[in-house]
Image (cartoon, rainbow, N blue to C red; front, side):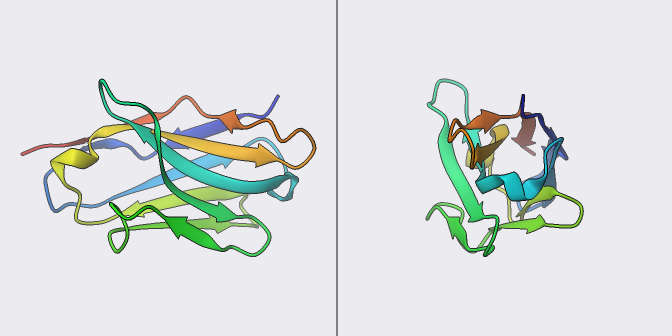
Length: 118
């Protein structure tokens, strides 16, 4: 079973920054894409950003474009999300996700909480 473990969440003031990390027990090349999703209280889980593992091609949703940057370290086998200029509306549980080549069944981490508040 694919294991994804997020870290790096916390409490930050508006305008602040955080960097989320996602470590996997698998060979990162076993995934087609990896991504970050978030879920705020009362809302559905939504995509934040995704990246292809092989080519490193990123996609960011419009609400975070220019503020968040997704990246992956192929040697460490780790996915990152650098978040700058955080706003209260970014408050949510952030989940790492990966799409295995073999099963094409999306795997999820347990999430890390990000709270943006003064």
